[in-house]
Image (cartoon, rainbow, N blue to C red; front, side, top):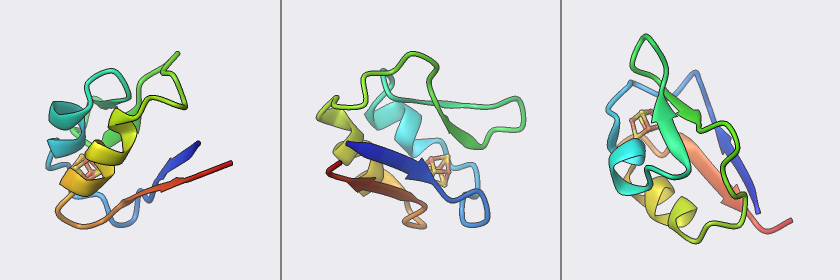
Length: 62
Ligand code: SF4
């Protein structure tokens, strides 16, 4: 899967990192970012995307 976070939409709510902590984390400013070394096919990535209140995360099949 291809996972992307739109930095222009992200408001740093942190829900993605709570929902899918093996895929998402927060940077020093609190914005969502992909966890280094994450499994791009982790099914929880879709949960993280669903949890984002501003729909900043896109998960597409590659
Ligand atoms: S849940 Fe959405 S708004 Fe919150 S940190 Fe993650 S990408 Fe950003």
